[in-house]
Image (cartoon, rainbow, N blue to C red; front, side, top):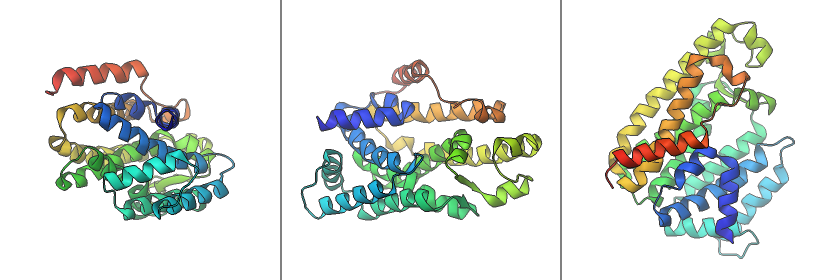
Length: 276
């Protein structure tokens, strides 16, 4: 039952990750579902209007009780706690994750790239570390695993500009916006300075691309069966970046996401190309 619950939560939260994850070996796939069922559960408390701050803190407290060995009512928490112990996730990673999610409750703007990266460390890089543990990768791979999480999170920021503005958030460094004459990323302000916005997006995509390329150097650490879904997800985020690069204003017209058919096609191509 719990695995079905985790799959349902994961499926509702991410088309690309969820669809790609079916190409993991079964044992790895089930652990990936447990991981994302947990982190998406927390996302669901902070990425809504109005935010569910009380539920977030109750969930975090229940997790802390579970770590201490107490019985809790949440199957998602119990199974994640078991996964955390079995795969030896660092306590610091989970603490960093909760800190970043708490920032979504309290922090709306980021002045510098360093501030943004502090948020990304807990929201995405540590998830990359956990994924590396689930796949039993050498610790030498962790740097690139974190960068892959960072790059994917950053392209999500670009893709979700309007959605985040509706939540009152802007993850991009204010210094970048000021450099391109942008008062805000609200659609009305962007339409008054389209040239500045296009250049702003170009800078963000270049930043994403640099991290993505470095992250993919870590693919050499990943066994073929596990590399297929990882590379597929990476390919789809690059596809998203290219779509936005062609027309940056598209982020105000639609949510740029690959179709399930495109994801599956990419996975089949990677299946044929990667030795397993």
